[in-house]
Length: 138
Image (cartoon, rainbow, N blue to C red; front, side, top):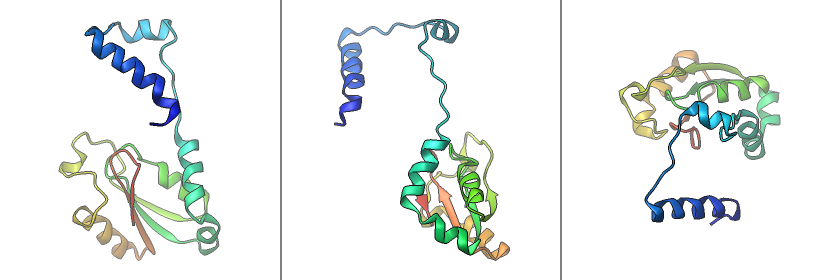
């Protein structure tokens, strides 16, 4: 287990053993300083930039269709690829709690619309994200 989550796991174990969970309103949580607003995009982008050769992508100015699959990664790849001079078209890039009636899974069974969009737009690449944007499908 990563060392940085050990205290969290220990705290959760204590809560489970005690059988009690302290509950209070969101307003009270704000007052107590227990709520932290984060913007994960910059860390997410920096991580992807360590894994993907964006210098080569930028040189080519490729056309990309991004399928966010109605998930948490809406606008992330659009923004990141746009920063690297890609021509980006997005599909399924709005919030839908039912994920368009399908699983937000970037596997062959769920990429038909992305493949169709790539062909229609004569794009060079199609990329799909899963529901929480921790996996890509190409």
